[in-house]
Image 1 (cartoon, rainbow, N blue to C red):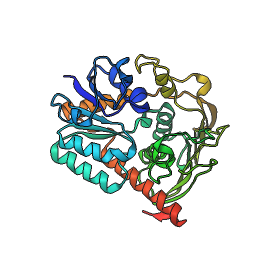
Image 2 (cartoon, helix red, strand yellow):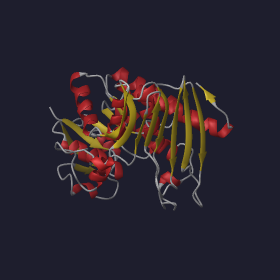
Image 3 (cartoon, one colour):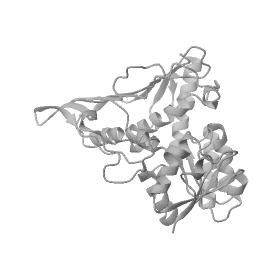
Length: 346
């Protein structure tokens, strides 16, 4: 059984992430792609029908799954319409713009027996999988500090994009912060408090292009930072524990490979060259260990493997919508913390 799938748009998300992952997975068939005026998808996905209106997808009884990969402010309404039409839904992060909207969609999907999940693909970044492995094996002892950066250098304001409009729930916090908060919740669960500083640092910028977030746990601080004005980046991850430290530079290679037109297939997919491996400095059985640690290969395709199993056999979702709802709770706390210049206790 192939899951007949529709993409609700064909921008960067559809062309780089969802389209290639679905094309490489034999359990899915892309049946329809929504493009309002262009035909960009026809070259890569000639088997798919290009539609001009979302209602054409909703009315097509042959479509099982809708991928809502549209601008953030459209997520809630388009997910709701798809669920009401009896479709399973994968929605891009951030899930919705508010916790209340997320709760409504979760209830609607459960009431109709439909799969609803959020595309948190960064859970399958190789560097993050490596951090998870280190923590699971206790290689650093009790963790006392976790620091994560997702920095870029773009010192200009990109024209004609909704992401630069200066709306609170649209900037870098909800874009990259959705990934970083989700990863932190996967590792440590919900924090006790949130302290956040947000800013628009670029000349002429209206939307947030910088954040500094502190998630406080018992005996552990998780520090999440992002800026568009980092020309020389430091470590992507720095993890410190009672026995040692781990640092990892660079970004998972999958996105660049996908942008270059590669499909996520083969035994070499997601592997990093040894020059990109992180450094672990710790001790075991009294022996000091300081060495490069091989990066676990990343694999975004595992997300859709799980979606297929959830739809066809009821297997538990790896990305539960409740988890992405909790991520929104943290992002909303960040906005409040920055606005009132105080720590928000959860």
